[in-house]
Amino acid sequence: MDTKIYITLWAVLAFVCWLVVAGGAALAVFARSINDTTLERIGLATVCLTATGAACRVFVAGWASAGDAALAASAAFYVAAVTAKHIRTPKQ
Image: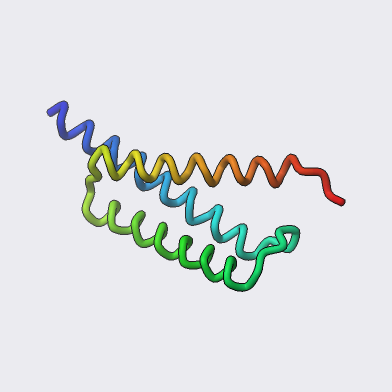
């Protein structure tokens, strides 16, 4: 029974983290204050679509390994750090 709980917790963690990554990438694509090139915005859109697909895969499968959850958590932490950096930077 404990194993099933851990697998479910990994899946929830991975699902939420992939949605954070997708949301952060989508915000970066449409943010007017971020001066990205077209190629960078295409890359961010690709990250958004890939993260959304990964979240859907975890949801449909109903489980995620510890490695899946760790990858999702590290990507979400990076997105949160970059978002915090852009929010704290004074407008010029």
